[in-house]
Amino acid sequence: DGGITQSPKYLFRKEGQNVTLSCEQNLNHDAMYWYRQDPGQGLRLIYYSQIVNDFQKGDIAEGYSVSREKKESFPLTVTSAQKNPTAFYLCASSIRGTGGYTGELFFGEGSRLTVL
Amino acid sequence: QKEVEQDPGPLSVPEGAIVSLNCTYSNSAFQYFMWYRQYSRKGPELLMYTYSSGNKEDGRFTAQVDKSSKYISLFIRDSQPSDSATYLCAITLGGATNKLIFGTGTLLAVQP
Image 1 (cartoon, each protein chain N blue to C red):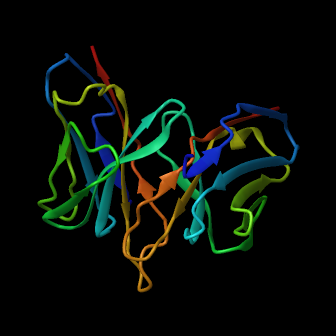
Image 2: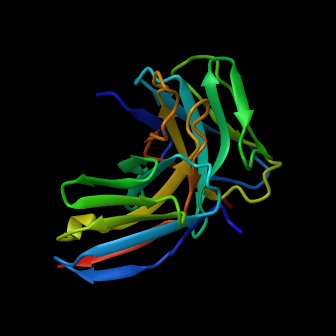
């Protein structure tokens, strides 16, 4: 079945440690995204990538880094510089139609990171 | 002013009720309007998508966009306990990028 796989589902880390969250898709989508979800704040865009080897900062990129070496993969590293990393992280992908993007995102199941 | 405002709820209704969920937005340039449904501890899934103004119906769900008042709505008829979830509105310009702006979500509970 086609879809987006995020791992791990749950992750606990000590303060000051870097953490990498995995996101893999087999939908053959060009664009991939990372969102952060906090209670009462909706989804906020961290980074996005529309093609391999290229990515752009979203609204809250500070303290995060990404790479896009393969079309299928878009890992997110939460660095020790991120002041408040405990959150639910969602990866998504989308396909660009002939008329451009239309707002449809396909999400993974999410990764819940807790920093102790 | 936030670009998208959504009543966070929570909203609790009896089974069979009609549910109305609403969002307002500030920038008239937005062209695509979406409703995503998110079950607890899961990723959101696209429920309804509308381009520009008008209504769109899919089974028990109707999405409505009024660009003149910058107001978007989702109506659920004959609500079921399986509709219990968080509903997120989202807007985007579309075209060259797919940067969505999400509302904060409304938590809906349908009581059997």
